[in-house]
Length: 148
Image (tube, rainbow, N blue to C red; front, side):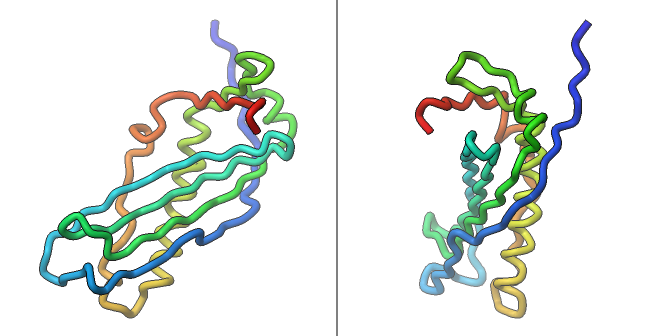
């Protein structure tokens, strides 16, 4: 029988707009728009912190006309952090479901930050798309603690 997992306690500690830019020369109102997404996870194991960095590039003809990168910083409660499995003494395993939950919070936050920046402009029709986070985080994250 599998051991029941207890909820992971955490708090949102901060939000930062890491990058935001509009490149008017690369935008044409009638052309098709694509969006590329980046997701990066950063850990500070000394403070039990996880940073989710989520970026979106809005493109036309392979050129970026608008970009945003927002980071959300979470503090995991000490008892929850200690429950993360240690693969080895130097490797911490963070469950994909928990990371997906944090990434969903970061996605909604990024959507709101972008809206606030472009509200009332010709770019206000562009929003952060709905994402399948499960595809972006397909497995538990193994973090090398010795390199931090």
